[in-house]
Length: 91
Image 1 (cartoon, rainbow, N blue to C red):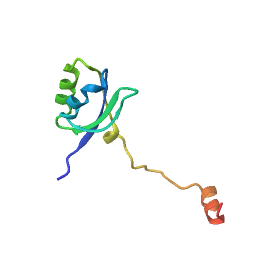
Image 2: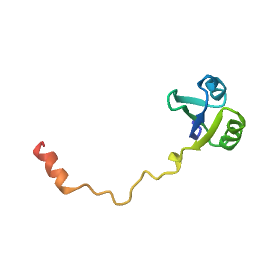
Image 3: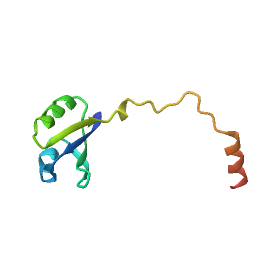
């Protein structure tokens, strides 16, 4: 069964503490240079995990990803006639 997940960006101060962040969710990417990690957690436990992360002394900021709430279906998506003509010409 699929669960609804949401992304979180965790800004940290020391890269040696990534293990503690991994325990709370699925870490997808970590940047050692810019000192942030991208992780996914379930939407039902998002606020609890966010509070736990902010309690850590090495975490400076936590940002949410609002991708699940952005509409991806467009009402009036008509193709451009000039582009269709170019495709037919092979340009």
